[in-house]
Image 1 (cartoon, rainbow, N blue to C red):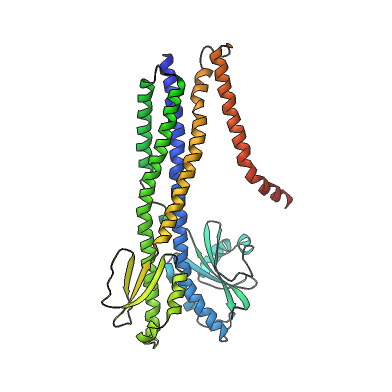
Image 2: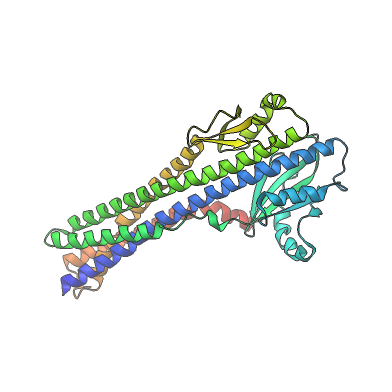
Length: 399
């Protein structure tokens, strides 16, 4: 009965701690994927709206007034059309007062809740490049408006909610349950194999199981995320290629010849610089077909024989995967350190509920030593973690 109770405690503690370690790995992996999805979505929105704002700034340099901008309805419609029903546009003057908005009259109340004081306080009056502000659950993509790159006039703000579809598709929880179940079964086998062995042998077996489980979880999630990163980047690249092809078609419709289009390297270079998923852009003849999965070829609607060749930047995907791999490595090291210490909890509980508790025997003194070690670990870990927040707390108190 005594051995059964001890084994039950060990299994329960092991299961809870292992589930926490695997769950932490799955959670951080999901958040990393989510943040990468938001970054790609932002890059796509920024590229398309950036083209629109370049035209606005050009018109301002030729004498248009921001306060009475003719054709602003078309501009707002184009910005909202980047993602139909998902993006709203608000133009602010240099005093951060609303000039124009795509919000309907009945949505003025919601607009006030979106562009509140906490948002306007974070606007940068001297910013030149586009920047993003996350506030109250919204993403604000801010495009500073300058005339001739000298006079600051205000901001165009694209407002959108983070897309819940950016979350990694299901499957992580099932991977966690399968690996956890396997680890518990192997622990039960270890309890039988090492029943007559010293407790140190069982502790080493549990540590080995946690390390193996974390590695297996990381490898499974890495392979799963790798496939979804490839799909996500491909979709983003196709959207960017469609947008660029549409812009080139618009230039042809305004009278530019195909030969003239071929001699516009600066425009193509600017598109490469604003698209993280793009490595090269070429204008090719109709005979040049798509050769591999890293190349997208799109028709230019107004062109007779010209096509757009969009080469995906594989290094960007590799950078995302490297970041994820390093994240997994950090999680494994931290979880191993915590798990190895917390596995002492099973032995501490076993000594605490034994009938010899408080007897002063050698076994009880050993149990008390383990308890002190465990409490010290919690204490010093808490102090170490709190150090990084000390400066923040002091600054908040001073303000």
